[in-house]
Image (tube, rainbow, N blue to C red; front, top):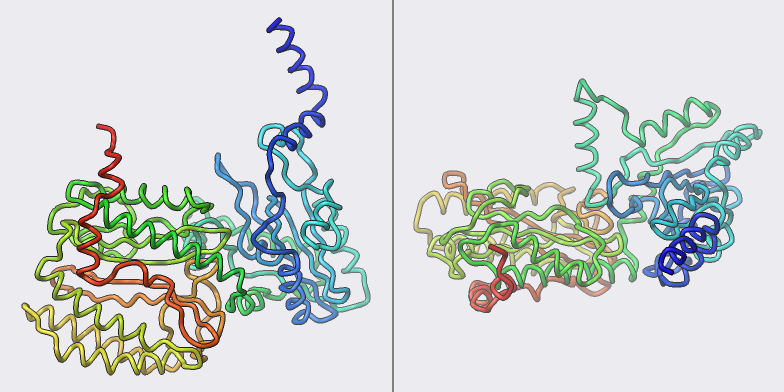
Length: 490
């Protein structure tokens, strides 16, 4: 009886894949299009691109390829921002004259769908149009034919495509550019970047087109966040803060740095994150001297000062939050001295952030209060006083630059796009501040980081619930943490 049942099941799997596919779809309630944004928001973004393109221009975006290894597919930020489509090897063509969006998708792979579940393909044209608001859907092989038709027209057509490398999982543009540079510099690699190869294909196959950079257009749009974008950033920031709070509770001498990474990941994924915004920077003692130390291998000791900088990716939106705290649960004399001075300066910066002011004006106002903190501070070592004075002087020097920034933008990338031109802060801007105090002689590094949203009437600091005051941190660290409740396997 069991053999007969098995053979019947195998028969259906081999000869009726469509029936099997429908059965899978009926069992799994998975949305095929994002629920974080309505189609109208993507359409509005495309409309702003059409406004820039004009009638004799096209915009062409290349989506992310299938990932290597057994990892979930994640669309690149640029493609997702304009379309919301999360299928690999997709292309989007925006026609500036007709103001229409054409999506090109691979054809259905029923074998893969039987193993992984349904993904949107060229055969789902009507469904894709209904879900996304995109005007027309074609197989990926039709893109070349359609570009050829534009090339045969009597118009001088420009094609806008991003020149900058696309941002993917846990990447910002600076990190992707570094990866490309490493590849170019390797004499046994040296291959073109994917975006470079794509542009070469466009130039060689369609020399009739003038190729222009779409990156500045997208960057300007992404600088100002919509209410739905801000909601996702707020969630990512809250999860980052909750992870830091639990890390404070869980930290004791004898644990390894990577154990706090595990605590944070549990909180992130338990609450719907789709990945890391960046690798965890959990650096104890001298490891904190290296701002992007990420090995996580050191066993922490009594007397160490710990830096933790980590955040999740929530629906393609990031955060970036940092706290420092003593591994012992109590600030030592030197930690209290240097951290206390730094904290007074740090709060002076936060206090002066307001809409309508330029970063330069904010820094100049903060410097006045930082000098007051310096005047009242008392240091136990000359090198500490030297470091404190250098910290304030460096910040004051940066305030002389009319194009200075307060920190870095935050959005779809942790180091988000948008540029820095010294303009006044305005509603919808999101950024972090992270000034660092260094004592060169003792390799001491102190840094905090908070996320700020500029509103119509002020500056909303999203991370005020995460302790930074000395007494609040010590009180929290006296509580039992997750690592104590669930000790690791011996």
